[in-house]
Image 1: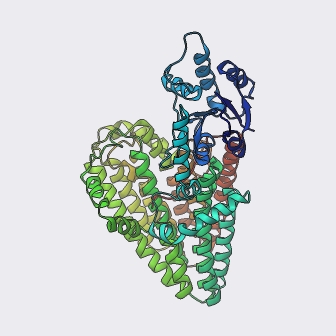
Image 2: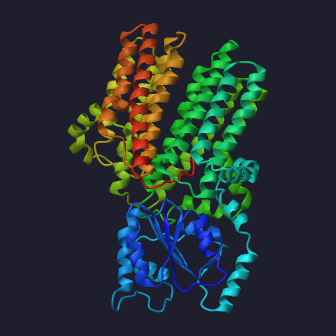
Image 3: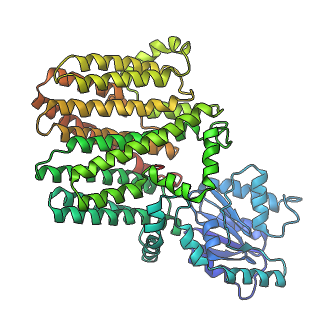
Length: 608
């Protein structure tokens, strides 16, 4: 149980002690600064500790934001400061300084909690100060100020602010206007019954899987039920994040589950639609796989662009004319919603899929999805290319490392890259994305335009291996080098799709769907580890599953040597093998990270 040390002069009628207990703190009263230091030393090192001024006046949610958010080792609001175990030494040093002879970094500050915060700032500690908005948090110096603070507290509805803050400030039109107005109340209902965000996330996954099962029946009633359940799953998907914000229940495991289950739900639903269509005599597996490929590549574009620019020298400066135009458009209200909707974020996308499933056929649903996602991908990627070309920014080593990890190069590309490193340094800056695009286009074109079993896809795969090695032979710091990972993803996934389609044997495309889904999971897992500052998956895993160029080469070898039926079996075996390896290692990693208390993270959802 976390401990709160209440310091300073007690105020008759104050509710601060009860409010701290309601937040889960074990409250101890300190008679003075020396007593507070003694109490701090007695708190077990693995527990959170807070120092709070007894004269504090404010909203309970202000205390909750300041003292219970698990994402920040140190946090403070006026009159209160808290430290998690990782930052206990910093707080202990700061308090010791305040009690030492002649100590005190802020002698004009009467509150011990505020003096500790000032000492932490002086030490260069990263103290999080939450945005309180209209919430009140103060330490009044006299009765009149106390009365004014209490009146300010009474004037603001704490619960209304808490509910409003549970909703993301920036979201799509469907989520903002059609879901969040009531899902926030579902989140509060869950919080009051002790449900956790992870439980709601799991409920959302189960609902989506049932929806996929309904779609797989191939009946009109099944399609209608599938559409309704998909919407219900999305409502729960919004609720889990709102519950996390409402109750500040953030965790590394929760962020991973939320992000991973979103992908699992959507792609399982694609498979359900394809199965349902097959029951009605319509084979749409190629469309289902195409939709998954397109959506995954869209996400990789988002992730790569963000990683390339997240800590660049110009990340916080508007040095791009394209970005400046976007900022000007933001001042015109309707354009904001229009631009958010045309990129087809998850709310708009799932609503479209659900409605079309209920009212039309799986084929029409996939056609609409492919057209919408293709337009959205073109729009967002073109804008990001323009920003990259016009923005004056220096990419950091961290960004280059993240892009290299996202590239997912295997042992073959790494070995070839070492031999090409010297030559690569003399090539123009646009070489990496250019050769990645050309090599990928070559292997995809060979798979799509030649007959199954011919040698040309294999020849193109060897060329792809060499161009992939050249693309990563030097650090990915060029203006457009963030395009390298999405080019690799598209090349690998589309090669599998076209070779399976060319095999023209029953079951080849579903097997290809399973293989791409397993590999895509590995690529998403890489993204979530990087975003959670956990590092990329271990090298042994990447080598075991071959890297993108190794898998592409193996698939092309199998297509050249095996019959169509044997190729289908080989795809199935590969899909199962890759899925087992990446899932076991991924689950082991995230569960272990959660158990050892990895820093809490909150995933705000897909950027597109």
